[in-house]
Length: 340
DNA sequence: AAACCTTCCAACCGCTCTCGA
DNA sequence: TTCGAGAGCGGTTGGAAGGTT
Image 1 (tube, rainbow, N blue to C red):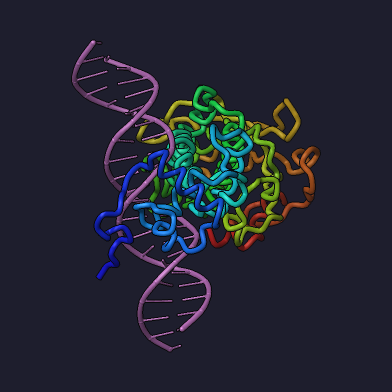
Image 2: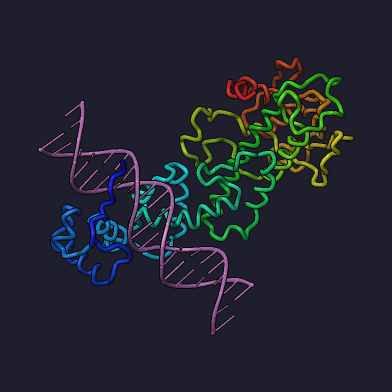
């Protein structure tokens, strides 16, 4: 099968256009319009196929073409549109007057794509790469390196991606919190794998994640609607999920990876309410031998003093533990049951 | 100065879509 | 409904230009 290329006919010229050819094409189109591209070469006296003429005209000779470097606004537009439309270059080009799909495609492939990859984001999904637990801290550190962000607009995009990563991390953290924990006696110092045998996160992974959260705690996002995300990425996600209900977390920066045989001492996790500098109540991150929620979870009333829309009642979760309502809201959400 | 490497982008290829006979 | 021509689109390539050793 296979259709023969339009330029297969013998004698038709291929390759770079000469100024004379350009002149012929421009003159003809200015006088007659392009009409049928197939017929154009013969009528204009060009030894090219119609397709080649069309490409030359639309990508290079058209009078309304804007040449030169992409502005920061154009760059941001491309990033935003690409996160929504994907590789629909012609659709993206329709939002950038004077730019061709080919030019945008080239700019994406040679600049923007590489930069996103460098910062640890998947250029197709605009999300942090999937192995969030092993890579997120590293990737966020990369994103924070100013020298990797040489355009203001890219920095804005990186910030947006970073906040999205924060939401993902929070989701994953919640998932961890909502995992049923095995009884203390059966899960002691031997649980040193990254995943325990029930498939839940290990302390190490959760702690890596919390370290990520600590570096993201400045992300000024409290609701999905505040993120400039593609509609598709929000499909099925209820924007009412109270991300802002999650307290800020601060992890001691001198935390060391625990020895492989388990954590000799659970690191201290300090909980801050939003906008407050002093910790509400330090508590220990639940080790594998500590069922969640630990009794040292700060009283919800203390958190609610500075976090919006918090109830102050507590209720009982499926763990049979007293759970602050801030977590209860999340437990009620079917989405979290699906994840868990 | 020369060789080699990397980046960039114009142009091509092949596929799909649209439309009219 | 089918088929073919033409147009449009996205992926890929090849060579020029610029940078590095």
